[in-house]
Length: 110
Image (tube, rainbow, N blue to C red; front, side, top):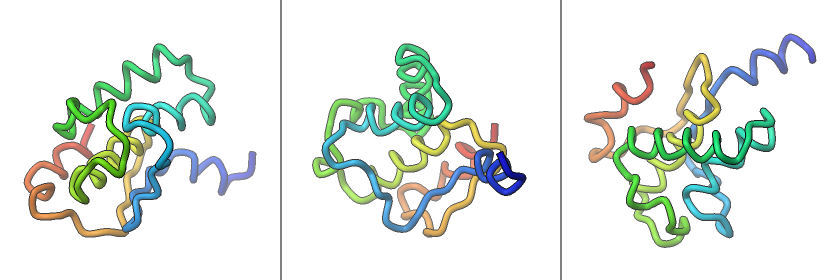
């Protein structure tokens, strides 16, 4: 792996357009990265996903699809999905929505 690829693998990104998989539930959106990229077991990925959904305060949305969520909830899913990869650094290209601003900094700090 090149130095750039190694650095990128430790940076979490949340984009303005959250790019959630529309055919997957919130829970599966959060589980996919760790399972596909890092080879984490489904059980461990599920536990981590639920932990971070709780951290961004939307655990009750785990079984919904992205289309069923508000924009702020989709933003929280995108944050949780990035956190599930356990990055060293988080970067956002979008400004947090008012409902998210109050707690978003606390969520990004380990």
